[in-house]
Image 1 (cartoon, one colour):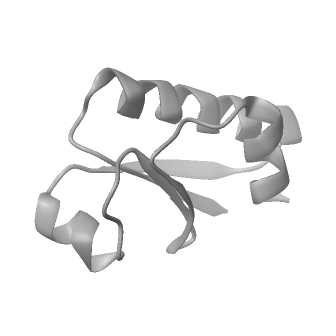
Image 2 (image 1 turned 30 degrees about the horizontal axis):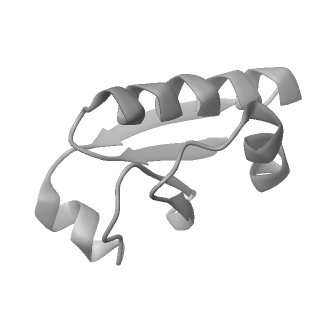
Length: 77
């Protein structure tokens, strides 16, 4: 099971990243869980300075932008 962590305070871009990440995981047929990390200190612990960010299984894959579903699918494979 993949753990998708959305790092951000809950802004519209953070919500869009969550939707896009879930869509990519669904299209790949992956089992996944989504965790929204909204606390600034926890986000900074990942080394992220720009939100939104996506971490997969604890590894930051992208920060500061919302990638397309296709880009996210490549990150999840």
